[in-house]
Amino acid sequence: MDMNEVQTKRTVGLSLLGTQLDFVGKRIDRWSRWRPNVGLCSQPDLVFDELHLLHGARNYRLANTVASDIGLVSPETEVVLHEVDFNNPWDFEEVYAKLFDWCRSKSFDAEQEDYLFHITTGTHVAQICAYLLTESRHFPGRLIQSAPDNRAESRSVGNVQIIDLDLSKYDQIATRFDEEHQEGSTFLKGGIVTQNKQFNQLISQIEKVAIRSTEPVLLTGPTGAGKSQLATRIYQLKKRRAAVNGELVSVNCATLKGDSAMAALFGHTKGAYTGALQARDGFLRTAHEGVLFLDEIGELGLKEQAMLLHAIEYKRFHPVGSDKTVESDFQFIAGTNRDLKKEIAAGRFREDLFARINLWTYRLPGLKERREDIPANLDYELERYTAKSGNRVRFNREARTAFLQFAMSSQASWLGNFRDLGAAVTRMCTLADSSRISVTDVDEEIVRLRQLWCQADSSIGESALTHYFDSAQIRELDQFDQHQLNYVLSVCSQHRNMAAAGRTLFDVSRTRKVKQNDSSRLQKYLAKFGLKWGDIVG
Image (cartoon, rainbow, N blue to C red; front, side, top):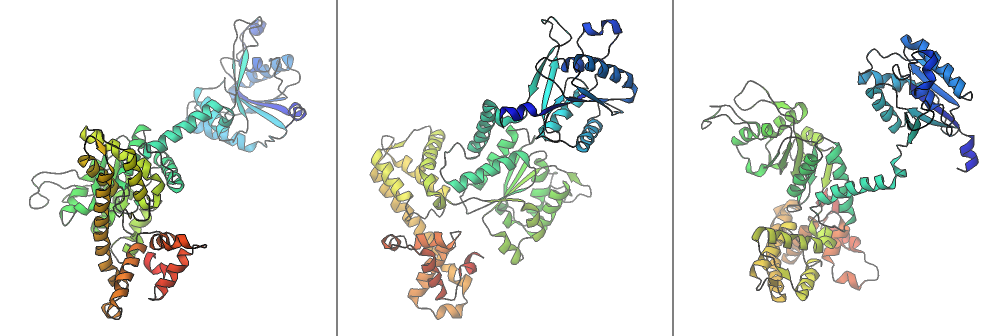
């Protein structure tokens, strides 16, 4: 927009009549005192083409006097009076509704007119409403504040300050918002500077949800991917932003078995069952006004799932042995390493509970899907060991290079994800002499990890075939095919897509090909046995 366009735009104001400040008193001395709306239109560098003045029915005479005086000091200004009555000017709902209705009835033309909402007059409630309507662009302009100036020769004029709520125009404020957002994301990541783009995007969205939403959050992903740690940090971020007042109650549902599961979750009365010597609140009641995190929610029984759904929906439930309901207003986070859709198909998980907790669902990637983040997480684990043991241990240069070369390669399957990495660091730090991890320490740890993963692969492989074939079909396969297919299926089950699984399976031969068709090679191999990728991950 050039200067000529700026100069041709009309300036239109909206203001409320000030029943006290605009009051003229003795007419002979009305020019010796500052009156907000008259002073607003007396500014030498600001000319209003039009001023819409809102007033109550009882103040019609005062509104006309103010309009007449504005005509004397600013003949260019057309004052348009609007009768808007507030039964209670301190009732937020009423004031906002009537100002909102007025704005909605007006045909704004921001291309031709510049709008200013005068916030000096009216109650504080009216001023807040003016801010909200301007910030939401229901009033598509800026705010203007006027004040008396006792230093000026003409005290009746005063001065004005225009406030633009478009924060993008204020670099320092915008920078503060960006820094606050970055701080929240960094906090959720435990201060670890991660490089994986998808993971950073996921954390950025979780930060927004943690602050802005009270709806359930579902964290999925393989064991050891960091679901419990992230749930804890979501709670801590909510606490810092005053989104919750209560405590975090974290429960691993795999530990809740049999009849005691219901009592542990929902509490029980004294004598509710044999051994119930005293009443117990239960985890849900303890989480009142805080956050309840149920890890491995797929382990819950169907009865517990039904009661949990009711508690999430209605914020109340019956403790075991009680006829009276107990209320608990908690925010809910669930974690699982299972495919809950498959659990629903198998009749082990309630579809209605899944639908309720599936609003914000995030899959945490395993460590092997974030190999570029291993160096930063390695440093984090070293610092964690130092804090826990009080002994600072570091790699020598060659040892660090050797470990990262292995850790970031396709040879490292990281079946236990971050738990494996943390355990590896603990072992190396414990065995290191002179607080320095050597190449020998690294070589020994690599052997341990290979053995650990080899055993895990064998265990997975033993059950892999039986998941896709019956015993008669398996007997028709050669021993060679059985073992090879077992391994392929176990690798496939650990990856989200065929391309990732193919990169692991063909890690050497793919480097010799001009065109790396990992997905096609894997697809053809599975087809030999009548399998499709969807059969494995579907």
